[in-house]
Image 1 (tube, rainbow, N blue to C red):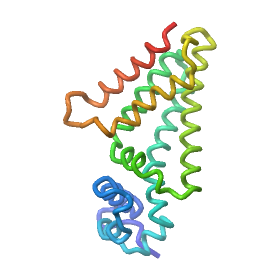
Image 2 (tube, helix red, strand yellow):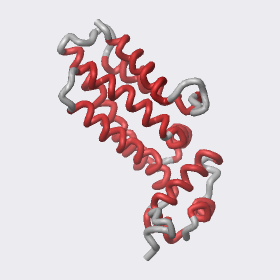
Image 3 (tube, helix red, strand yellow):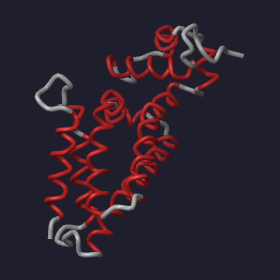
Length: 197
C-alpha cells in the first residue's frame, strides 16, 4: 500500500493535488501527463491510482475541493441569525475572496471543464447548481420580505454576480492595485445596489 505521507508529513493526496494544480495551470490539463504529475509530487503512478482513479478525477477534485469550502461557508452565512441583507452580503463577498484565494483552481476549471467525463461534468454541474440555488434563495427571501426589489429576477441577479466571479482569473492579479477583500467588498456592494428597492 502506498505511503500516506512524505518525510514532512504532507499527505500524498495533497501532494498530488498540489502538483496537478500547478502543472494544469502552467501547461493546461490536456498537455499535462500523469507521469509529469507523479514526478512533480515525488510519488509513483501506483500512488496516484490508489487515491485518484484517473487524471480526470484529479481535475474534478481541483475544483470540487474549493466548491466544498464555498458551500460550507455559504450554508453557515445563510443559516446565521442576521438580517437577510447582511447574510447575502457576507456570502457575496466570501465567494469572491475564496475564488481569488484559489485562482489557479478556478482558471483550470473554467479552461478545462470540457475535458471532464460526462459523468464528472454532470456531477460538477449539480454541485454548482446546489450552491447557486442556496445563494438565490437568500435573494428570494429578501424579495419576498420586501428588503430587496423584485424588479430584476433572482436568477438574473445570480447570473450577474457569478459571471463577474468566473472572470476573476482572467484579470485579477495579487500584486495589482486591489486586495481580494477590496474586490469582494465592491462586487458585494454592486450586487446589493442592484437589489435595492
